Length: 276
Length: 262
Image 1 (cartoon, each protein chain N blue to C red):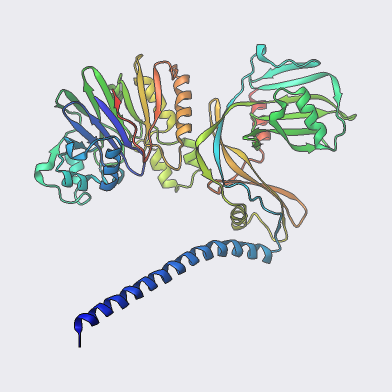
Image 2: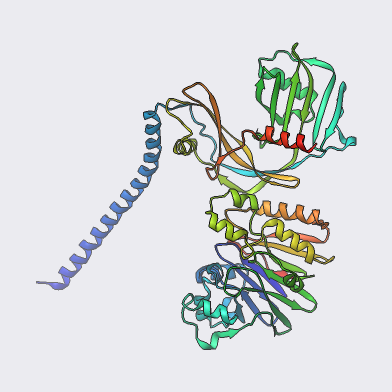
């Protein structure tokens, strides 16, 4: 027997076998990775389905964004923006309380456009706010400031609230403003919407038979320092419960923590009232 | 005198300081391979080091210490208690590379005075260093729970600071760390927050051009922009306007600063 030849054949065969096995391993590893992602998504989707939790088409176009900062605008009497027909009072340096000497009629109180028109025409930096909520009973509408063209949720230093009378005429509004918005250098990956639903479901905030009616990416205040704030990307998730009650949840879009900010405006107002 | 913050953060710390004759490393908190890469980025060679000054025995300060010292035969300086605490953590260090640098003492190397001073941190006997040469002063203080009057005496009126600005308190409080860790970080033997660091800075900086490098930022509870903004505002509220004679600079966990002349 030619041992040298046999040895060479053995080495060749084992080399080919090793390459084949390694290729198989790589294929199965990559396949496993894909399965894991798909598995997670389908798992939560099927669990939501089992509990009859439905959801709208989820946003797909946001993957990375940045933190932002802004500073609180302190209004000096000499800097109060002038608008004809408006009497302005500065409260605590950072809030304008404006009375309209002649109330201005809204085109109609049922469409978003008429509020926005008012804001653009009669409010300083009006275009930097977006409508959040209309309370027909109290006859007031609340606008939140925008950061990076996205809503900054419930920030007592960045909102406008307008008030109208029974004839649909705006007679007053109040305003706070965050200025000098600056983007932080580091870009952050955003949690995919389905993962946000998974977080809410895991925390029992998505109850059986509820509907996720709206998901939107905005910002919430992460850090407040004396005159500045840092805003973190935040998912807004609106849920209609089986009892037809709307709940709004906010989830930090970077670390997935539930952000408890819903009553901030009210709480801060209460504090300010007490201080006064 | 020149220095570079090679890396700073909970994933590893190393600061390079040199004069015309000697060069030192304060801590080796990264692997030997990573240290080689960092040195290459500032165009220096680790084999030329005169010594390594150890601040304390936490792994983010000594991770690559044994490997680097043995490979390049670099003397290590640490106080007695830190040497004891490092036993078993950095491998066998030959006697000829073991040197003592006691707390609150000064050593001079080619015109550069290196002074050690105690800090308040949950290590066995932690200390940091000031570097003085030709009337210019560099301070390195990156792990302390608070800045005492005694520390302030040591670090006052420097031209450059590598100063801890570890966390934002509200980010830490809201963050994912277990309560025990949060309590430890916030304690007197933990780390200083952005605001506390700025208050301490305002009390030690002199009215002369001063460069402050914000260091040891927490990955989870701070951000460079936030640290800079927070320190700027706190300094301002203490009467120090940044940009006038005080300038703030970032450091990074992976990228060295350029070599800065003090």
